[in-house]
Image 1 (tube, rainbow, N blue to C red):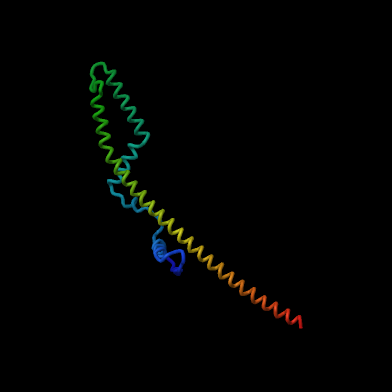
Image 2: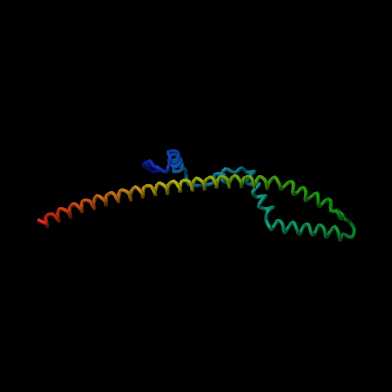
Length: 169
């Protein structure tokens, strides 16, 4: 971090300037949550990606259709007759087993989203304060330039007045 002079600002308070110094000291925005994930977090993400895919839905739909057709059309042995209690049990087990994985993955994603939102907020606040400081610097330069031009005009007016006096004589 290059040392930048602290500018006393009528619009930015001391607290704002301290926050700006803190924001300048931060590293560029990166998500540390992704690097700090545990094995369980990674497993939850993998399971959620599989269960939440079209491939899984299509395969499961085909298996359910085959199960129902085989149990309805079976000529000799119906291993799961019409209300399909065994199928209901299997689907309930699957839902009960997959739900915690999905919730863990959602919680992890919420944490990542909160961290990213905080980084975005910090970046936006820093940019706003930097822009405010730039406006103040430009206003200061403009004021100084106007003062310099005013002095130059006064000097030229005095020179013109002396030349006119010399010419009048």
